[in-house]
Length: 388
Image (cartoon, rainbow, N blue to C red; front, side, top):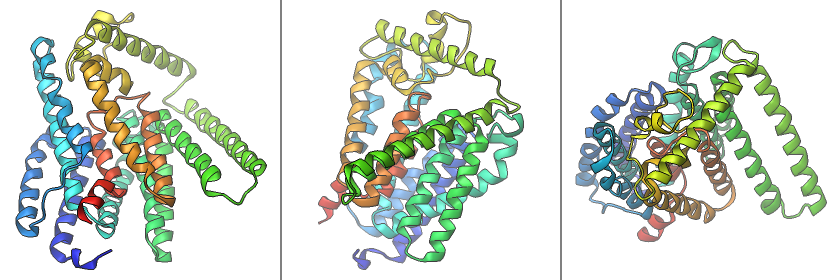
């Protein structure tokens, strides 16, 4: 790395952006307070304008940002006929803000040192807040419902980031610290009782392990590779069932609750598909899924979303939105596959986690924040080429 590019001015804005990201994390994803995010939203461009004035660097724009940014604009035709225009506008503005947040991230956090600083600050902020709040607000521990799945997702993502920092820092003390943070996030993930997050993290570990055995352990015989993979999958299977058994015997869950939840989710997904059949081009409109659910649901149940990212996209943005959605994933995966070694391994873990978690929860209107973290952590090859 060229140390001339690393100075106190850049460090100040990396820290400022890290704190800003932590506040958004706390209020919108952990506390689930959307209004605070909108209030904080004005700070995005203000921070960047100050940064550009002092750094004199040209703004960097990549394909992923452009796709993020145009995604809500393509749904404008649906705003003409959607049932609730207020919900449409709110979701539209949220998506614009988060795409700009991603733009801010890739322009301020530009090199390896800055990426480590950014992730370290947000990681410890999240860890401290989560330890303080998990038993009173966020998780299902001791029967408290909260937003357990969102909390679980957050803990899983920062578990992976702990592994990233454990690898990036060369100092042994730092490595030990991030082993400890990884264990703490693992504990908090289990305390969330979020089945979908636990399933997603276990599958992502399995996929990463399979990739490691097949492509990195080159000197190991094929028969041994197969045995290692089978043993790891079996261990994961028993770990998963042990965790789920513990969750089902908690104060929150019972077999009936689990079955009822599955029935409701199935109905919500089928309802979303029916919406797509009725409005195939642009969908029912951003944020309008809950205002159509009573027309298509077979059971009386109000839901704010489809509990499935793919169905949510199809039902609210139609085939037009789904094409952009696929292109976003395509470019992220394409970028991850150009990485090498452990960076590639961790990238595979993250994208696998999201692809699995998408089946249980719609993330497109809040996952942009996590995508920002992913693409800040892992080197963006478009940017590297533009700066060479």
